[in-house]
Length: 135
Image (cartoon, rainbow, N blue to C red; front, side, top):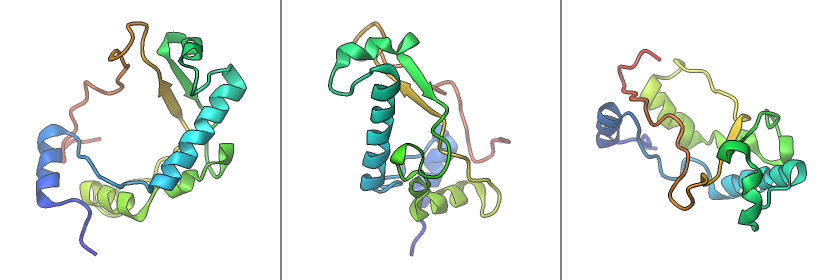
């Protein structure tokens, strides 16, 4: 099987600090995780996917769900997020056996800010990672 990232992808990562990996996580897995997070938001905070007026309950426009660590917490297949395709791509970027698989449980859910449409909070917009980055 060919590696998921092409030479052009690796060059783009080195230049831009990120790369897009299509189909990194199977769609069914992503949908199951999304549904589990919405269920958690509704159960704990009354924030409903289908009622944008409830999104204002997210203080500062975001909610951190720290309790979503490990296994099948919240009924979602978290471990399946680390698909073979995603692992192979990270191996290409970092080197095989040169990285530790992080947990997938700290979810920060960002909602449109008080400014309305187009005013989303973006984490890490100031980072500039490259293949030569020490971290």
